Length: 350
Length: 169
Image 1: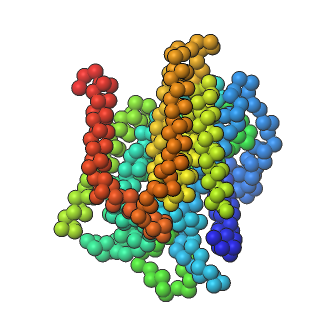
Image 2: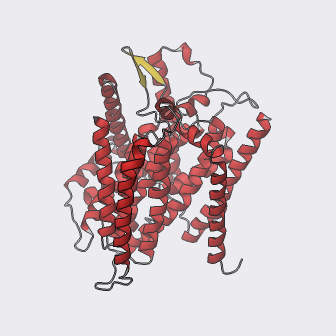
Image 3: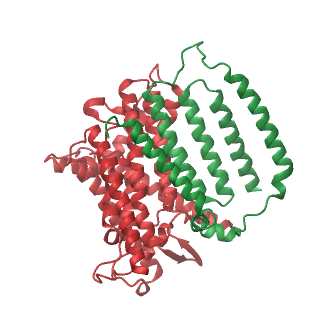
């Protein structure tokens, strides 16, 4: 790698990490505010105008709280578990494209940190490691409620990871590539059988999208699948014994995961940075890049909003219902989706 | 230069984690070190331009199978064996003998086979560009029968597990 390239990549990483961390802070604010509105309350409105400085106040509070480590915990794993949750949540974003290429000052810059050839598999791989934070936190806390949360979450993750991966296979079959930017480029055309619709993943893979969305909710531990936390029966599940900044790391990890999930959903099924019926050559490169980033951000924000919307609307599943849904409904549907996609592919190319 | 450093770092991590894995008394720690070892090996795959293999290694072994291991360890509370109680103590002798045999085999392999091993027949550039496609092509042409045999084996295992787990079909 040459020096300018190295600098460009470093700058991209810093910007993306900064944006994600800021977004995480305001995502928690949005959660509380929107949750308030959905339940006909006001929501946080004390710190700053409309409560806008609330995340800042929360952050300061987390920092200055005493960092207590309970006596009977398994100290090394107890300390490292929050980091194991947060770091994979932050680095999954590395392969998500937030725009196409743009030429600035003689350098072609990819609006994506790394365009690795395994693309979507990288996200699945890193996301599958994040679960260790929850499992190890629950075990290291030496508390039966935490342990139950950890046991639940390990079973839940394995069950839904399967459906999640299988639902993506349909997308890969249609777009014939693993690279996320290529997948987005392929979504730029219009559909053959319905020229008024863009060739987005959701229109060519409706069933796959449904399975993916449900599995994504389960993978991010959100209601209706937040059984590892399950505050009604498990106190606070895996993070019962955590406080101050360590708890904040779990919290940030969860919200960073949701942002990444929303971004991946937008990328795979809603055309990523594409805008339907827009001719990119009509714009100057920087303007096109800005529109692409705006389009990608708007779609991501919508799915981020969906996470909040669902959380404050739907009650939690019971554990046996969760397992039944995962293995007896989602998995067969995901397999059926692959079969149908394959059949259509064969008929079309015959 | 950078590659050499990365290789030795990954190799040392893999070997160190493997040693820690077998020497911990606590099963949860053993599982954690095995995960670290698997991830380091995945890093070695990336250095060999086998990104697909690396991703699958992490998804399947580190991300799914080891989570199930942890699940079982936690569910059975098998994390800390009772003090002074060691069943199957004859395992130590077997373990020692087999380790010596394995070391000799590895040594012999490093002395003879490694430098003369045939190259894979794929260029570095092609591998970097379309790794997954090439693995897929090989699986469905040259190794088709092996591939299908393995799928039948796995299917048999799934059916067997369902039959064992269900009292009434």
